[in-house]
Length: 252
Image (cartoon, rainbow, N blue to C red; front, side):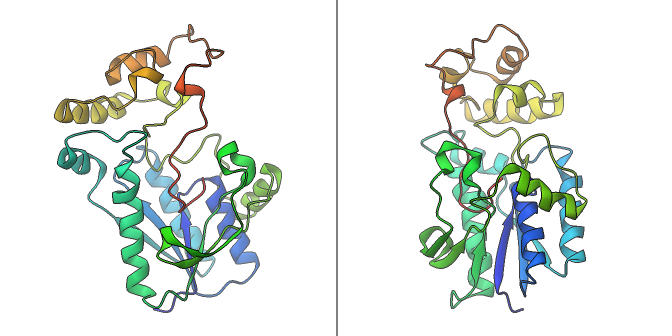
């Protein structure tokens, strides 16, 4: 199977827009890659299937990478991921992606496409459009063609796909350790139980207690997130910092 482009998608807005961008430019031999972390939102499976179908309609190939899975990974490490120990990204996204690319592109001649936009956040405001030899992608050329796109321009691409524009970020990993208060408040009992299980197995909190007013277990964190007494003006809260999972593989 000849692959000219590995297009990484989280199935979120930006990376789906990137698929339309690639389709409009008749890019050949595109493999759309979704990293299945085994930790997505219960409703996310339908989104993945829609993007898989879209890829087929565009003449692209679609594949899921499968790693050890979040729960099994945390059990193995006996700790939860955190800001300075983001092993989840390495094990569940980067490692299986590199294995896939090395299998289909051993000579590193293919180009990697990601949907990063500079407008997304301060953290990505200087992201380069081209990286000749990206270390994180095995030395392959990395191209982020949407870096200068505004949200309006991105949405124009999304509308052409006829896939819904999401009112939130990708939920390929839900809840992410960087989940904002709004997202935590929306967690279902099913979501809470899966996090609670990991917290009990590892003896460590899923969310940093320092960023959640000292709450150190998932049920207390969700309760906190659903209250209205949180002072968003508090500059000491990590909740407000521009942090997030940034594997360099998808964009949103």
